[in-house]
Image (tube, rainbow over all chains, first blue to last red; front, side, top):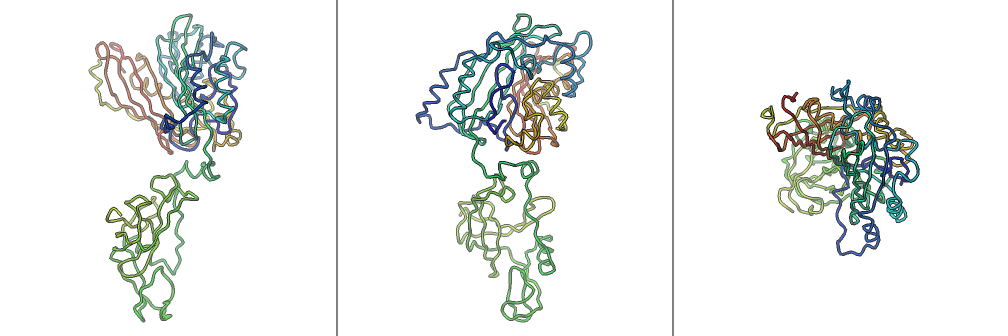
Length: 354
Length: 138
């Protein structure tokens, strides 16, 4: 995709934007929600009037089908099929679109993209839908392409969708269909769908997802020191350990070097039964932090202060209910969650629906 | 020979390292000079963390995966793909396929559902129809 709203300038004749995919997530735009069908959308009315008009007329492949381009393609793809080599070589069928591309120089004026298609894209750009992402490519192959075949093509604007909201942003899907001929015979069809969209506003962390999303985000590591090492040793054994002052028997949590009740320095531990209730909670909406949210979307997620049956309180995640179903008094039970290979944490599972 | 194929058969997965070289070579071999497929600096200016694979390369890899399995005498009749998570350098694309239908004369038209996942999620979902001919299976 071209999130910055790259202009449409590639020379491929029919469309730019055959490149890419959503930059930030794994959702393709087709999952977008329809805007309310009854909502007035004057832009849509204008856009959809282009359906049926040409996207490219009488385009010509810049080179006939040829062995060097076939070989370069196969080298790039790691394709070693013998069908594409030797005296009887055919072109890999999936090269269909490649033969129609304008390359760096573009197609000669008047033979590439039609004025109607330029207008359609211009309307979208003008309305702020400046980014483009390719979402679908459907090709049918009617006959093999062989070295020497001369490629010609025509394309039509097949459809413009209603406005849709996708994870990338809000926009319109534009579908074109190209008919490709070889030496004047129908050789294949190539249906292509792009989303022209206005990028969703995201915070900088999300706009630049290189590290945080390409590698699964990890929760921060706990700081383990001599005062709390016993707690984490307990977690490793799936035991939630509460400190107990050996002078006055007061329980304390989180772990501390001394007793707040009597200042005693000696302590032992009591293993929590695991029963508790939500004493209080907050819902984190912003900033997002994907590692804390099981869906990976960064939230919202609930952070709760759990009052354990023993009387001390601990901060943790409530699992098993949506964030908006967490309530004060909700009964919970301790369990241990392995968030990644190197980290296990105590979390609290709601034991009823909230 | 088409008895050899049954609905439900799974193709062996194919793992393809998504190198910078593959992304650039695929873009150029497909005559796609959009800068987001070869110039990391310009890709970042446009909000992408890095260059990413173009749809034509994905299409080519799906075609290769199918013909690798069914053999050089098999002919692609249709490849329809939908893209999701981008392929950035350093990732690995894992293609899987399953036969979902056998059609046509002597059931020689095979429909394969293809998926390709990377570390971010599902890069591609597709449907391929491939024709296998008498004596032509791999």
